[in-house]
Image (cartoon, rainbow, N blue to C red; front, side, top):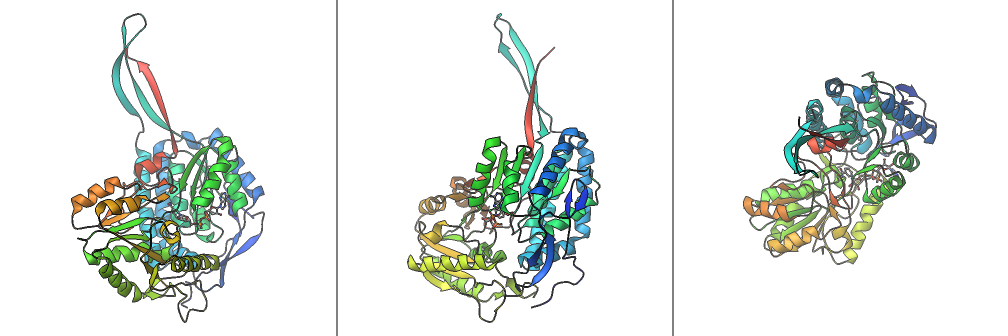
Length: 496
Ligand code: NAD
């Protein structure tokens, strides 16, 4: 395997809490490379004692100021300085992302591009005056006269925000949560996945250089115990969580006694609808990105491929031949398209999906096993099943591994019904040369974001992102995503 860049800082031994670097109370933990299974770094492990300090600091910083009362421009300028620093240290960010997640450089680059687009948007929104005038109205009074007056709405920060991120996008999502939260005047405690702490420690280093008031930004690493307290503690006003629906449900339950705001970005089993009139090259590219990108470890991947039965055999044959030619292996090799899964447990879960799909009568068209010659690393072949039924285990459950489930349909109405027969509703795509019909179908789909004639990844900067049903609550990205970190206030007044 190609070695990691030597200049990369892969060992951190302190957490960033209350404006200071300090040793984590639960010791140090090795960071493992998913592509070699070797130890490639070390990070401090946070515990309840560290979180206790971080929450106290974040609470004080919000309640006593000056952060929440700073001008919008002051906060936006600081976020712009952070953005400039990220751009300068892009190579380090990419290096740590590749090291911890095992994604290819192109895939990590795409995460950074998305981050840059959204940071630009958040900083633009942060500068805007949130005050909006509502229309002036007249209304009847008890004395028979009519009142005349108006109202305005404005937005306040919510308070202390706990942000919990998953392993497949710690740098991207740590910033995607912390930047709008801080820019809106909140204080933040951020926790990454224990699998990928280093990229979040780099965020801490970049934020530390800004000299923000102590307590505005804090990082505590750790596992479920820390996450549990981050979502249940009464000092927290909002928890923003990205991860699985199973843990998302726990977060919601943990948060409920204190009735704090819960913002959830969860999993999916997103449909890719391929109509009979689809451009086959586009359909295959969307299909490929829908389950091979990041080895299937992406939330809005379109792993449920609903294909018109008249073109299904052609589509499956073209997808098998294109995906079969892709290189799986060392993510540092520029020829590689797909790297490993994050850990052995993720690969074992992917294998279990294959066994169940075969038991349920699906046809294995490609993959289904560990690739030959890759003895180390949690690799699994890109796998395509045809003849999947929508209500089967594979048809309904999120794999978070490189498995495509191909399901046939005979009419647009059936395609929409199948697309909507899911507990999830995060992403989706339609490939068709009839753009009007595709648009009308998109209107009928119960999912938060749909791309027409693109796979997941063709994102517009103003498009909010988030899910219906078990895929989440609230939105991330764009102005709506920014506003999730605000309370809406209205003030009414009589005229004259
Ligand atoms: P996960 O749910 O296992 O863990 C996510 C985070 O929750 C980690 O930081 C973990 O330590 C923490 N956690 C665990 N138990 C907790 C508890 N009881 N209370 C609070 N926090 C707790 O998810 P993962 O395996 O890291 O990531 C994969 C999942 O994330 C997939 O389901 C994927 O679809 C989803 N995801 C969603 C989006 C989105 O934007 N919708 C983006 C990326 C990933």
